[in-house]
Length: 504
Image 1 (cartoon, rainbow, N blue to C red):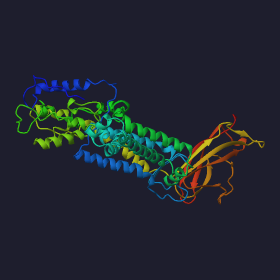
Image 2: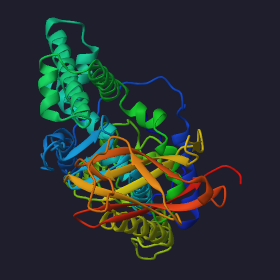
Image 3: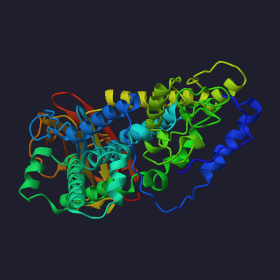
Image 4: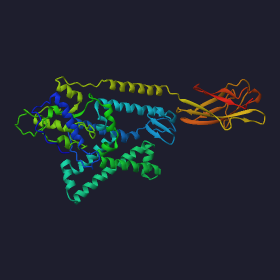
């Protein structure tokens, strides 16, 4: 992006007076607004930056990619016949395993709670530090950074890549381009492969993939994820953040005048002008029009034009500007994390202030504590036994040849432990004699109650039939209770249902 020429009426001072702050902000917005929202993409060749924030981004990339690629290979012993992968979305058996936590389909509210917790956490971070998520930990940012590492290693830094783009096709250019895209494809394949390992036992699936014995759906998803990683990380890049991602358009609601964001301090940098060694600094600002903040930007914007939709707040412009300020002997921080409120404070002669604890940040924090506490409480007090009783509705009852009335029920016993358990079934609520018959259950206890064995980490359904003499049915419906009792642990689950009969 070209830099706008300086206007002659700018005051020769390094501090913009209070009455000109709004005008400066409007000018910055107008500059940013000159770009078409649907302009054709211009290829961006960001220069490599060095400094504190670039180092932080290196470590974030290493940690996040390490977690993503290595997590499926972490083992966690859960006993025989249970997956021993620490993090696993077991679609076949409808389970989600996360180390010692096991989530069943009917416990999806835990997943919902985690998603809500993550969303509020993102709101909290954005209201405090702006789009820091986008600049450091967003998967798109991380993979684009990784692709740029490969691109710089093979084709060189910014100027070398520009020259290569403009050069005619030769064996050297063709070799570099093919090598780059091969490495990009390898990274993309590893990305897609790592994702499917979260859905299956990683060592087993890896062997199947190598021997071409994995299910076709696995290869399909690897192809889809490989394609999206290759296209978004290698070609779309900043277009994803500008046009595809909704977050730039949403995050403005969470930000206010005290939100810290990467900003150009125009009250110190204006008016801009080139600087030569030996020149004085009277009557001018600290910005020397070097444009280093522009050439390192992965979105290709000029941070001096004010807050912009495309800015992902990666902070590389801070490193670039600080290195220039150090060379010319000026204080660092011409581009820095700052807030709109601080511009007002400096203009009025008041001290700067970092105001993180505000009503909205406190509200987000309280919500996170409540939701996080609820999830932890629920996990600590979750029951390891769940029994559901479903009464047959078609037909509601059957009249036997003996005249007795019979109802059918399906009892589902969910054993959430990793041990084999045995349960006895009993029924209360009948005033007199009743008969209970269970399909496929032969074992009984000393009281003649059926004993149902449920495997470790399994659900078992049992069909039972209850019948009573017709003359003992005093109404069309009787409330009864079906009781499942763990013989060894003495856990008891009581389920209220009804026994139905014909009108009297």
